[in-house]
Length: 148
Image (cartoon, rainbow, N blue to C red; front, side, top):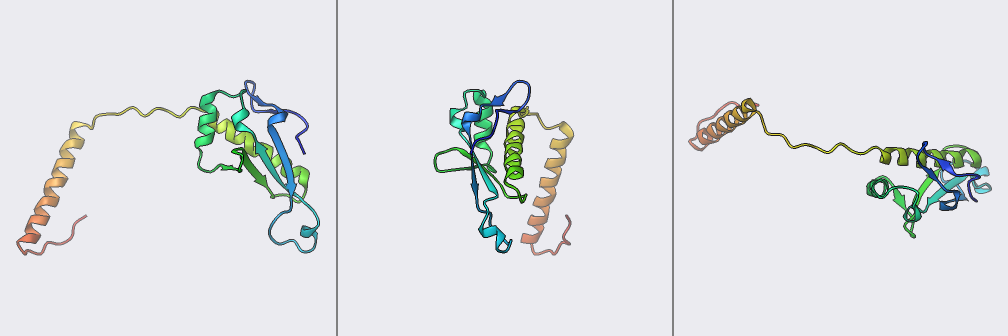
């Protein structure tokens, strides 16, 4: 089972239909006798390592996402069993894939390291001295009310 046409992400990127493979499988969970007869759950396998139509940085961001599942061949596996019809679940898997790629297109901002402010350094030193005094007084056996 293949999608009918290429999946268009935005005006710059699209996924050729040859890299998408869909399978209909039986859904899990309750549903009575009907659930044992029909295969409405859809699995979408996306051959990402064959994806020469996407830049390498986008592919590497997609692969680095921890929420994405991969099948045994190393292809992205997206499933949907939200709807009762196979057609709606197939559309849902394509929308999920599109959302993943749209998220990966946006480059994360590079964090610029900054120096702590003078006031911030002073406050940190004051807190360290205060904690040190509390610990020193505990060693001497004086009971100090807990402040924090």
